[in-house]
Length: 304
Image 1 (tube, one colour):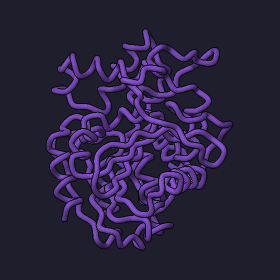
Image 2: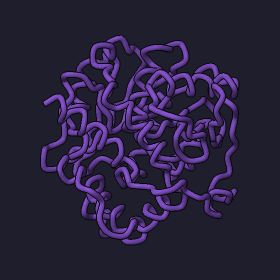
Image 3: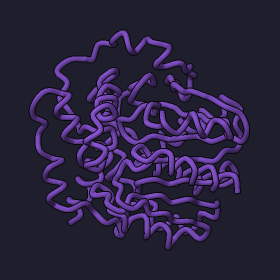
Image 4: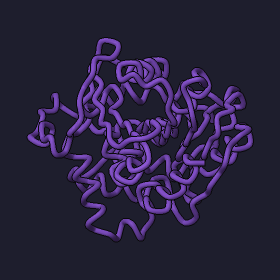
C-alpha cells in the first residue's frame, strides 16, 4: 500500500503539467519561444546560487502563486490578469523548470522553501498571501507552518497533506499513468489531459491545443522533472497542518481522480480556520477549466 501511495503521488504531480515523465535522449535546445519576451516577460534573480525566474504584475497586497511539478508561470495565465487588478501578483518558476536554473537533483521540500524565502527577501516582500496547486500546495502549507509571520492568507488547490491519511488514486488510474507514453508528443499530452479535465473541456479544441502548445514551447529537461519528483514521496505535513492558524481556502474538484477529494476534506478537518469549496463536476485542473468562478471565489476570500 505504501508503494502505491509513493507511486501515485509522484505521477499525480507529473500529471499537473498534462504529461508525465518523458525520455529525453539529449539536452533540450532552447527554441525561439524561450527567448520571446511576449511569452516570458519576467526577470531572473540569484537565489541560493541559482537563477529563479519570476513575473510580477498589479498592485495592492502581495499574492504569491506557486506551481506544481513541471509547471511554469503559464499555469495561472487565466488567473493573473484578474487577480492583479486587486493584488500584486508574483508567480515564479521553481528550480528545475522553465527559465529557472536546473541544478543537480534530487530536490527536497527544504530546498524549495529556501528558494521561496530567498526570492521574497530579494524582492523585499515581508508578507504575502500564498496560493499553491498540487506540489505548490506543499510549499504553501510549509510556509504557513514554518513562517506564519510571513503569511497573510493561504489557498490550497488540488493537493494533499500526505502521510498515512492520504487517499490515493485508484489502481486503474495509476496503471494508466504509469504506462509508457506512446505516439507523437501532442497526442501523448492530449491523452494525459483527459485525466485532469472534463469531457466538456476536452471537446473545446482551441483550449486543448493551447494547453498542448504551452507544454511544448519550452519542454522541461528530464533531469529537472526527476529532481522535482523526488519531493513527493517524502512529503508529509499531516501531523503539522493543525498548527496552521492562517485563514485558509481549500479548493478541490469533486471528480478529481488524481488527488481524490477526500484529501481536501481531511485537510479541512485539521486546519482550524479553513474554508472548503468542492467544485462540482470538475476535476484536477478545475481552477484552469472554470477560471471565472475560481477567480471570483479567491478574490472574495482574499479581500475578507
